[in-house]
Image: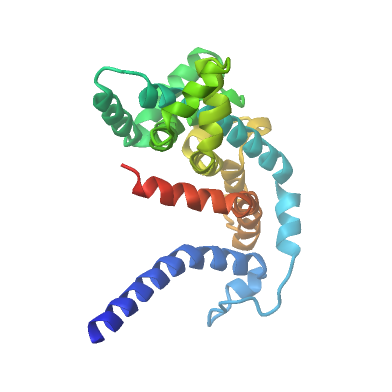
Length: 276
């Protein structure tokens, strides 16, 4: 009984540590967004605003074109997500269904590619985008983000496609569907949890990415949110409350997307965790 109690206490402690590690930074940013500059520098530190103010949110919209940054991030993230899912679905279906030679090597190569550090790919991607004249455009980020998201999206979808009975596709093709028709009308709807999981991961990765966005789009008209938030910093000033307010605004779309699709995402993650 003692061992059981100790094991349960250890699991609770581990879960609480993970939750605290994930939630504390977000709560700290939220609290800072409602503090004034004076309260932020007051000692002893106040962990929650004593005199909450919404002035920082007003300043976030006043000091920088935040709506433009939000729109640019939304266009880039949605474009990269849709393109990633489209290409990943085709690749995953080919791996899961077609009689490909050295299928294991292909999967190993996909895993290996996904482990490349982003900084090692930045210069080649920059040269490619410059060579085709796509710098300072939405495509300058949509294409690289799609390339970076393809491995993880493909691996997730392969795991789900493999567990769908072939008889369902065969029945659809007997009724007149082509192989692609069976993919879009049978396989993908039945793999909805996996599709949503891959889509959420691709969206969040594209929404949060900073390095490529900073390097490829220097024009204000195409600046995304992570780079735009950096613009609040001055040469001799660092307005933490205003930056925190902008960060809170930046987190809202991601939180909304996850809340809407949380059941499908959790289902996709847990299903993917038990599949061979």
